[in-house]
Image (tube, rainbow, N blue to C red):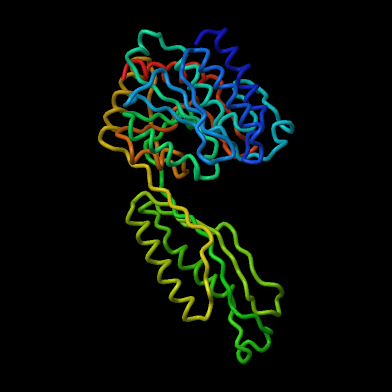
Length: 374
């Protein structure tokens, strides 16, 4: 990447990071859409704002209409940070890192996508069908854009998700992510004075919830890399009152699909335990994400990327990730899916978030080379 291009990249990144783009800031998301819509259009690309029922549309851009696209590149415009965060800690540079809300997760990935395809020679792009989709709702689980992204995946060959490459001593990419079952259960027992609990017919919602917590935590299995966590609990009114109400929210993450079956079977048995205890249980959150598993085609594609990286004197390393991305629900619908294809950074979802500035040029240029040569 030429120095003048890099300087413009930083200017554009500063502009994007200094825009709040949480779910409560649709005006910020619209500004991001307007920026990329203008930039893709100036390249002669087709652009569409696709209403998926989210707070703003998806932005779709493609170099030419195709029945089947060689490359499908995607990323998300939304961040987890509330309105006002960009003003509190705006974009800044400290040595070789940039900081600010969403700088790593994942405004840099959107910008890297733009700069990569912009750098590809027109005569090369004439031989490629490339479609780009920026979604507005990934940080809340992609409830609105999911079906649309899967639809694009079904008519594409390779998906590159430009989430950040994890930054240790070198960029780390991803072809495997855990799946997840996420849940929220509300328990209703019968209140009564704690001193007369043996005779007043009271039933503790908290006691039943505790049984569920211990049972669900037993699903954790280090050897199979299955994790379980209850992250939120509430309930009761006073220490001398048998709790009528309780609530818990948690999740199970897994590499192997049969672990999800095991979790579902356990939860079904827990309903029976609650009924026998006299506690009613209502499930108010039920979210499932499949694990991202590499196909044989993905493995072969990554082998080619390793060869290309070696030619440049670098490595192309992949590592499993426990977190989720759009790749979880896209990968079952496309032959090849590689995640973590943006410039390197870390600390997402925190004020420690950073982007490694040294990775911008090499990683953006490598993304362009992949689209051009693979």
